[in-house]
Structures are given as C-alpha cells and as structure tokens.
Image (cartoon, rainbow, N blue to C red; front, top):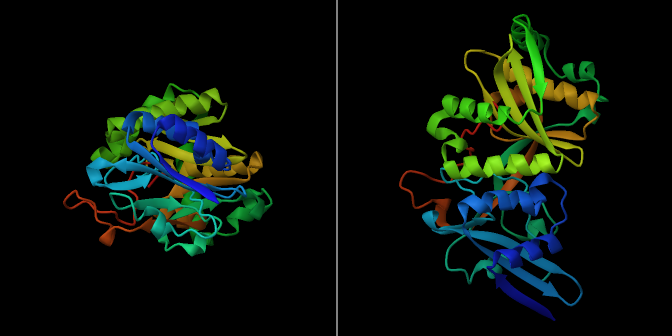
Length: 326
C-alpha cells in the first residue's frame, strides 16, 4: 500500500524535503533552496509518494510560468537555465518517472541532476560536466599535482601568476563587505550575461551569503594587488567539500583568475579538503588545470527542450555567471 499526493504549500514542501533528502552537499539544505524561492516565488509542486515499508518517491518541482514548464525546485531560471547543481530525484521501485509526471499540466525540464538510486530507470541524458579538484589524488602535495602539467603549460601558467605576484599581492579572507565588490565586478565583466544582472538572483545570492555566514559555512577570498581588490570569490565549505559559488575579477589585472583559482587548489591541499567543486561551465582553464570531470544529467519531456522565449533555448552551456572564472 502507498499514499501519494502533490504538495503545493511551502511549509508542507519543507517538511517533505527534510524527511527525504539527507544533506550531503550544501545544495541539499532546504534553507539554501529557500533563499532562492523567497525571491523567485515560483509555485512549488512536489510529487510525493510513501509506501508502508518506508520507501519514498520525491520529485520536487516549481512551476516557472514565464517559461511554461516545471523546473527543479526552486526554479531559479535565468536565460532559460537554472543555477543550483546536484539536484536529487528519488524514485522507488515500481514507479516510472514518465508516469509520475504525466498528469502535470505543463512539461518538465530538470537540469543538473546527480546520479541516484534507480537512476538508470529513467530516461536522462548528460546535461553538463562539472569539474572537481581532489587533493587526496595528489597526497595533498602541490608538487605531485604539477606533474599533471606539461613543462610548457606549467611554465606559462606560473609566469602569469608570478608576474601578478611581483606587483604586490595579498589575500583577505571572509570579509562580507567584499560581497558587493564581487557582484559589481561580475556585472561589469559580463553585463546582461551575468546571473547577477537579474535582481531576483542577486537578492537570492545575498540571502544565501547571510545564511552561510550564520551557519559558519561561508568562505570569501579576495585577492588584493597593491591593496586594491582584483578578484573576489565566494565559496561554501560544507562537510569538507569546498564549492566555489561565484566570483568576480577586475579586467585590469590579466591572469588574476588563474591566480585565485590556483590559490583555491593550493589552500585545499593545505587544509586537506575532500574536494573542491568548481561547478559546471566549459571554461578552457578547467581542462588546462586538469580538473576531474563529473557529468550531471537532465530529464525533459518537452519536445526539443525549447523555452517559449523566442530565440532563447535550453542549451548545453551554462550562461556566464562568473561562478567559476572564464
């Protein structure tokens, strides 16, 4: 025997989420999702089934009216794409994803899904590739890591970084006032292609920063060149996984992105972090830095996965947000 329902009340959805999803990544935390729901305010619609043996099925959706489809909760879309990664779906044995969403009044397009139990029972495809640095692969030793590079590649990267350091580099940590500097840098660099160009995303992210600080999870790294901010990254350290969430760089300092990214890697080795998640986005530096690829998946029952926004489509490349530097 089982009971099934579609939950639409946000408090009901919160209780369901917390009863099913075990927080393994920062994005599993309800409060993180709520930071975005607060400003996007899409109607939640959680498909929830529970059987008498304790088996649970959960598909947490949000109705994104402007795109006429359902996205993964909270549906924080910008230019046709969502931002939060490692989205989880729970499908109990005996249930079909296609059947479960067949009664919905709109199609679904769910992105950045991580593998899950019964994952291969639904029709997913590779969405994008995330990139990780795993310090233990190199015994937490940067010299072992540098062995991955060709001599030419290493010399080129090192020359750029040392050239900036020669101008006088220092680091500032966990200064929340640098958050606004990061946002300003990001919008100045990427303009309308920045997620922060949307005030909903900007306010959501500010709310996220305050929540992470309250929980002791927030990490902000600011690179100063001659005392002037040249790059700012915001990250979250949750269960010894460092996720680089967003960043901004000043274009007057070429190569500063390589410096701050290498700093994250070096510090992760020093602090013996389990892994550094640089998120999705096929920027060339990620392959140049020999980061480990990890695919994320999508599920869609929308023909061609095209949004009702004219030329805007669900592409396979995240819009530039500066979450990881280009």
